[in-house]
Length: 222
Ligand code: B12
Image (cartoon, rainbow, N blue to C red; front, side, top):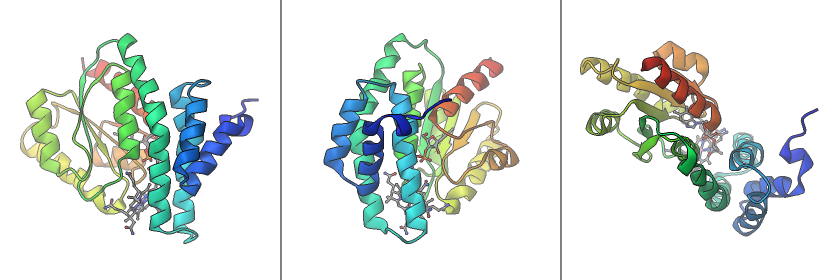
């Protein structure tokens, strides 16, 4: 039976705990140790993302408050300092693919997940234009036109920002550009069903799925 890293490696469990506690120093130590043993994507998906999920649940139950969530995000980023460069290292061997404009949508400043998706896309050969967070809808369209992108990828973690995805689709249609771009959505506020319902072309529950979807959608379009 498959045993997750969290079950089988104490360093993974310790990294998970360090992120939840917001302990930057120990997060740094365990991430440094893990990158010598495992694929970066496995460390993110099996040790780091589960920690943020737990932090979210604790926040929802009012067991922790915003300062603790900020500390956890900082500890997550401390680990990314080791894991990120390992992901980037894949880039040299990846075949060249299309261009992606990515950002976290208007009103939303969550960017940890978007940054991972951007890194993974780059690692897999995509040319990535990262607009950052809290990105106004029109900026996605302008950048996509400017760089002749293939894909627009939007991250949404706040339910209150979901309507902006609909605004983006509306704007693309108004400018007769909807069919020109592959539109992908993801992030905690989005479900596969919602993505289909609003008319997005692709969805990814995590960064690996995002990459898989991007590659498939691009092949289908070409
Ligand atoms: C960390 C965090 C923060 C940090 C963000 C730091 C940062 N630099 O990003 C801080 C402290 C700033 C923060 C602030 C707030 N937060 Co907050 N936050 C979180 C938390 C705990 C973790 C998010 C995270 O980073 N996860 C780890 C990453 C790796 O996962 P991910 O983002 O889901 O990304 C993965 C996938 O979704 C996917 N993906 C992501 N983007 C994309 C894009 C595409 C195209 C694709 C295909 C895939 C994809 O791949 C990623 C990698 O695998 C979540 C809880 C949760 N369960 O999500 C709450 C959460 C998102 N926050 C929440 C809230 C309410 C807030 C605040 C409003 C709180 C407040 N009262 O001020 C503010 C909002 C500020 C704003 N305007 O945006 C709510 C949102 C509820 C909702 N549905 O609307 C959540 C769900 C917590 C909760 N349970 O209540 N938060």
